Amino acid sequence: METPLEIGFHNLEPSAAIQAELRKHVERVEHRFGRLTGCRVSVERLHNQHRTGNLFEVHITLSVPGHKRDLVVSHPPQRARERFANPNLHVSIRDAFDAAYRQLEAFKGRLRADITPPSASALTGQVALREPGVDHGFILNNVGSQLYFHRDSVTNARFDDLKQGDTVHYVEEEGDAGPVAVKVRLATTGI
Image (cartoon, rainbow, N blue to C red):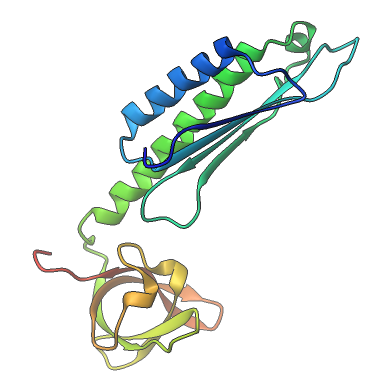
């Protein structure tokens, strides 16, 4: 990781054993996805309750390269009522990291989908208009009409890097006001 692991405790005394356990889990995360740029883990004891015991909440923030948003797992305390009888910090940590692994695998799946070649249903067009400061543009299709596309539809490039005349692959779908382009991919050499 580019930045060191940050561990925080709230309403709970820091423990060397818990920190070592958290570091072990973070090493497993790094092993699954070696390109992490940062990780923050927060462990919080919610409050003292004589009926349900001390409930723990674990928050994990994973920073990945090339994405403005971090992957965030905010794992609430154990849900099942019978598990409240014996709340356990180690179980809360394990459950939170299990959720983080699932979210990271889903993220990796989205990355794989972004680098796969365009499908047979993908069409080819050119960026006709993309004005600076707006969050949409238009693609000129093969019949000469223009299709609207939103910045969130661009999958393998940054929206701000698209220029007029760039060749793109897209999928056409019916929108509220007519056809729109979705799953817009900047065409690269070799596709």
